[in-house]
Image 1 (cartoon, helix red, strand yellow):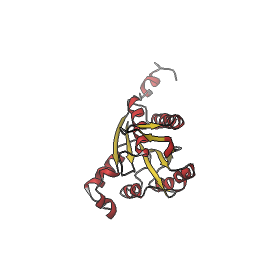
Image 2 (tube, one colour):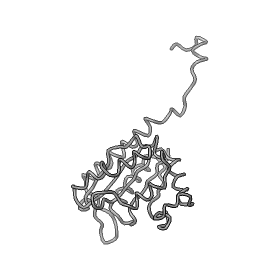
Image 3 (cartoon, helix red, strand yellow):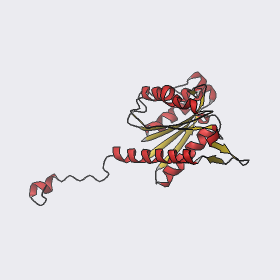
Image 4 (cartoon, one colour):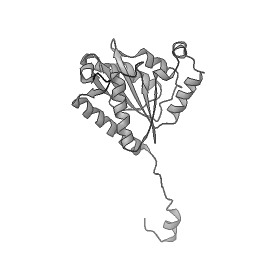
Amino acid sequence: MSILTLAGSPSSRSRSSALLRHAAQRLEQRGLSVREMGLRDIPAEELIEGHYTSHAAAALRRRVEGCGAVLISTPVYKASFAGGLKAVLDLLDEKALADKIVLPIATGGSPAHLLALEYSLKPVLSSLGARHILAGVYATDRQVTFDEHGRASIDDDVLHRLDDAVDRVHRHLYATRPAAHAVDLGPLAASGQLSV
């Protein structure tokens, strides 16, 4: 089962990307395949002008189509998710997130921006067909810090909530996945060799 992480920050050294990387590592430890994509993977001009037919946009749509879950991270600016992420999401097809498990992750300057996930990001995800949007993980800037070498340090409370969210992604993926080895018991039952 493939998972796509979609980073909505233009910086590879961002708090929201640090949370996304931690979640991806936890999912990989569970044996799941995780592919990464982000704002930086699509040329700025194509994002600004909304080049739906570009190679980068087509690659984004293929990756989304081929995954069972999408983890989306974003910084929150002025009570809304990042505009760059909106430009990325605008390159997706209308129902691109239908039948996908979606986990939103965000960071912001204060707890007051927590509701940005509910009031600005979730409606956009719903408009893309998402019906399995899990409870998001939000952290303040103080809860995700970097040392002089650029290594992220994540507050214990945030780590706990993020790990719980990863557990939910894992459970939902396997709950919605058809049985890998379904057996047709019809002939056995009909022959009397199996009581049902």
